[in-house]
Image (cartoon, rainbow, N blue to C red):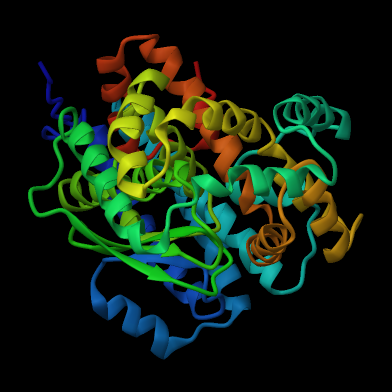
Length: 433
């Protein structure tokens, strides 16, 4: 029998005197921070990923058009003001402590983004530390060569491995005319599994759009009021494994659920206005992408569960032979082990060690990507830079954090996962004992 966990954030009762003083101070900083994020969005079109606060705040930012120098100076003032607020730790409210740390890290990342827009050049690891509060591990080529050697055994033949791989997996492409049907079935299943464990706002919803000419495969545009627009890029063939990946990552229990719970539990219930705006280049993104990626394994806690659903529902809906499902996913598991190859390509490209064409060739060899897919990834790296760590490192950090608290208990995994989605905990907080 399914259980529904309804999460009540601790400390929502009438705060003590210390907590009230801390909250009052943080509320002032939070509102100024939200205004600063919107101001920076006037200089960086990718910066404000979502905003569902008072419309007049956005209008004000558009009218004022603050300079980068002014935004940087105000960020420094906010950091100083935050240091003077009453110590939330003394209030006994864990969420207040996390909130203060969240604001500190987010404002620091905003200040770093300002410096970057003004021309400061950072190395890959320095940039990810400044923007995302984390640094990805570095792997030598030999690490990927060991995985590639295993792939070579599964996909024998002549010619480059990426070429053989593309030919081998061609039968697993979802036909374009069946893409929406397959995707909607995956969404329905992921949503049902999420609702069995997490109480979502009753009016939550999202719509799906199919787009082209984008540097990413999928994107969630959260619009506020518990609604998202999810876009799926059809520039390149979409394979059967991407149905659940996209449904869980962009929808349930990924980005759509994450943003809905933040809006409900922190903005509406607590009045924490810093969560009415989501700056893309900030520590929040590592948690957002990490939970979205790990959400696939929360929704389908065992490989057997996922394989059963795919063989019985998704493969037939796509017109793909389900008898080859086990063979297909054995290879996909190895491909996932190559995910950090994308980080290495980004690190070398951003650090100036290789150029764009060399990055494409490197991804072909070590990430086993066909040229168009490698070129798309390089375009993503050039636009979003060290953001790439948020997917694989984010997933690994979230997985470690959740599993330390839940073990193998699937129900507890859901409860810990949903609590994380409803909290201001950031990357460095995931490493706390």
